[in-house]
Image (cartoon, rainbow, N blue to C red; front, side, top):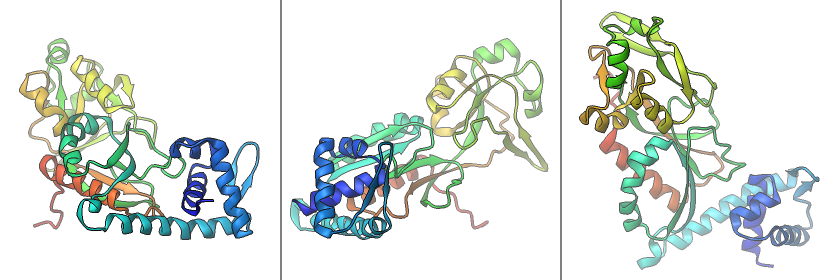
Amino acid sequence: MDRFDAMQAFVRVVEAGSFTKAAETLHMSKTTVTQLVQQLEARLRVKLLNRTTRKVNVTADGAAYYERVIRLLADMDDAETSLSGAQALPRGRLRVDVPSPLATMILMPALPQFYARYPDIQIDMGASDRIVDMLDENVDCVVRGGELTDQSLIARRVGDLALGVFAAPSYLQRVGTPAHPRELEDSQHRIVGFLWARTGKPLPYAMHNHGEHLHIKGRYALAVDDGNAYLAAGLAGLGVLWLPEYMSRSHQARGELVRLFEDWRLDPMPLYVAYPPNRHISAKLRVFIEWVVELMAQHAPVLDRSGS
């Protein structure tokens, strides 16, 4: 038995809650993963997992062993990447999940530079706006916009997304250009609704102008749960959009979107990188996070909130 492979297999089974899912992420057969865990239990003379036909649960001894093993595996990874010369480059597989527009418009165009620095890192990137079960899906980190509701995660604020209100010329020609945000509540106007993952429904947007503060909800004929689909709906003239500047900039320049209510201010949307508290910051995860920080400093830097 290779103890390293056995410990890796055990950790993946705990995190995935399934031998089948663990085998998929390790690129092994389910039989091999099962045998590795059984051999590890035999060596330790301790039952690490309770298996049923439907689920795998970690025992009390297994949970304690898991906490020690993830630190040991992370330390081994760091020890290997701390060697001098070419061996110092971080390497290995990294699983991340990011919002689809951020992936399309910012991360993908910059990835060639990332791989020029770190050619031995393999990234499995989910591009979605859904809530990801990081332990069950064995995800190393997520990038998310908006305030995080899961207080169990360790989060680093990496950007502040400036927001604006926009509409396509075809929409404005058909319905008219609203002069005040309250007009978006009128019967003739429509917004494109965005279904936030944590609530499953559109949320009102806060807008400020001098002493006036509004929360605009609007009416919609279409609501979507993906950022790229949301933008596409607005470009098609299906309603008014609230967009981060990085999503709207090129479309404004081409005349495909028109900014509304320029005298009104919207609070910026915070952008976070988050990871589970039991996920050790490996060298590959650390350099990925720092790369995201560098990118967002160019596109949407964190604002000074000291009040100065």
